[in-house]
Image 1 (cartoon, one colour):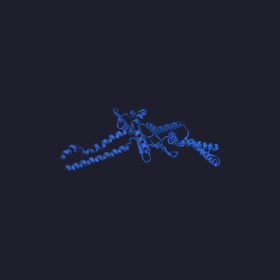
Image 2: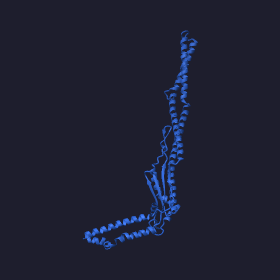
Image 3: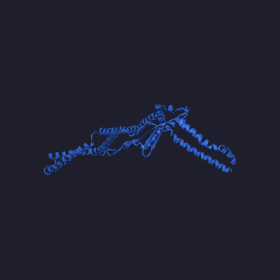
Image 4: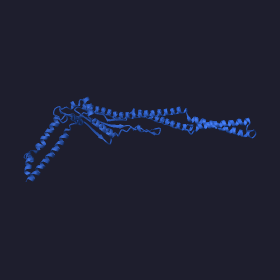
Amino acid sequence: MVDKIFKVVYGPLYRQRHRLGLYIIIIPMLLLTTYYLLIASNRYVSESKVVVKRNAELGGQLGGIAIPFLNVAGGSSNEDAQHLIQFIHSPDMLGRLDKQFALRKEYALRGLDFVNHLAPWASREDFLELYRQHVEIVFDEKTGVLTIRALADTSDRAQKINQAILREAEQFINGLSQQLAREQVDFANQELLRSHKGLNEAKETLLNFQNKNGVLDPLVSAEISNRVIGELEAQLAGKQVELQTLSGTLQDNAAQVVALRQAIFSLKQQLLTERKKLTSAQGNGLNRVAAQYLDHKSMVDFQVDVYKISLAALEKMRVETARKVKSLAVLSSPQLPEEAEYPRRIYMLATWLLGLVVLFGLVRLTIEIVEDHRD
C-alpha cells in the first residue's frame, strides 16, 4: 500500500530528486527575476496625511432653558474617518476619478505585467479591486490620522490622483456637515413656525374672550369696582351716622329723616349691584371672568416665551451653520515622488527565495520520511 502511494504521489519527485533544486528554486527564481527586472512596471507613490476635525457641539441653554434640538450629534471623529475610508474606496469615488483620469484606460494591460494591470475582459468588480490596491489607506485610531497613498505609473499621475482624492474627500466631509446643519436649521424653522402658530391661536382665544365678555381687562374693571364699593360703603356709613343723629331730634316722618333713609336705600341698592358685578352665582362675575382672563393671558405669555426661545434658537443655529461642523485638515499634502516605490525588487526576490528554500527543504524532508517508511 505504501509503495503504491509512493509511486503515485512521490514517484516523479523521487526520480528527479537530484533536480529538486532546479525545479523548486532555480527555475522559479529565474522566472521571478525576469518578471521583477524586465516585466513589472514601476509604480510611484504619492502620500498625504489628513485628519477629520469636528468643532465643538452646538447647543446649550438660552435664558436658562435647555434647547435639545440645538445639539448636533454627529458621531466621533473616528467614525467620520471610517466613513471617509469607505467613501474613498467606494465605486462612486472610482467613477469620479475615472472621469478625471481615465483610470480604466491607465490600468489596462500593457505588455506582460498582468499582475498590476487589467485584462481587456476584466469586470467592474476587478476594476474596483485593482483601484483599491492602487489607493492604500492606513488609519491610526490613536491619533485619528488617515494616511492616503496613491499609486500610479508616473510620479505626476500619482500626485494628481492623491490631490483629487483629497478634494473629493473634503467635499464629502463638508457635505455631511451641511446636510446635518440643514436638518437642524429645518427643525429649528419648524419649531419657530409651530410656536408662532401657537402664539397666534392663544392671542385669538384671548381676543374672543374679551369680545364675548365686553371687557378689555377684567382685573382693571374689578379694581375699579372695588374702589366704587369702598366709596359707596363710606357714603353709606356717613349717611347712617347722620340718620342716627337726626333720629334723636326729629320725628321719623320729618322730611330730612325720610330723605336720609331714601339715600341710604339707594346706596344699599347700588352696593348690591356693584357686589354682584364682582361675584355672581351664575358664573358671570368679574372674579370668574378675571380668573378665566388670567388663564388665557398666561397662555399668551407662555407662547410668547416659547416664540422668543425658538427665534433665538434659530438665530443661533444660523450663526453656527455658517461654520463647518466638520472639516478635513491636511497634515501633509501630496508630494511629487522622485523614485518608484514599487515593485520592491530586492525585497520581493529575497522573500521568494526564502520561501522556495523552505519549500525545497519540506519536499526533501517528505521524500526522506517516505523512503524510511518504505524501507
